[in-house]
Image (tube, rainbow, N blue to C red; front, side, top):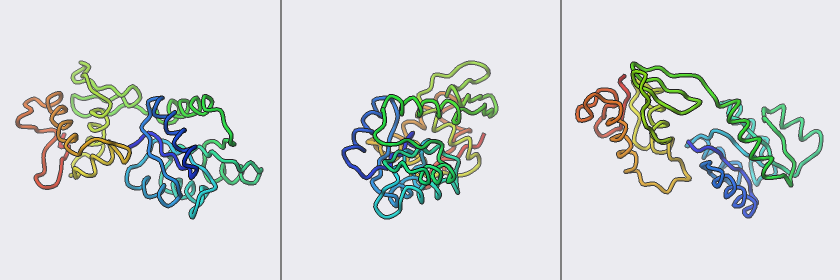
Length: 221
């Protein structure tokens, strides 16, 4: 899953915004129209959506409505449309904020950071001897902290949240690395190996993360 889906049909503005977001440490997926945005969201997901309104084909209001019907993902509308009715429509459709163009990038980044801190902070997942702090993105085993990268943490969380379900390699790769990734699918296999070395009693005969041959991986717990 990427951090931010940027939906903007102005290619120069989109590229500039994506550069700022990546420099701030976010993973980003760009879309230049509403149909592509919904397709990317359905396939990869996003932790936050930055959404223009004036898009070719499916407009931003329709995208906002479609996402909000399924998920509570934070949505910030970025648009040149500043009429009162447009603002009301955006907010009523479920947008978390409505920002007029041109906007101050530092203020936008501050708003994004604030949304992540308020709305995406969650509690604790306890799975056997493992405790995942979803806010701090840390893991302990029997009270002892485990050194874990962000991707390892995200992969472990995804597996645990889908306990007992076989997840294909493609599913796992797309959810964790997303469409903006330049990584190779083999990266997933490497991360599974690293996770097993950190959480399994015997990584050579894993009992927590099992391999379903020809299909993918499953968290047994």
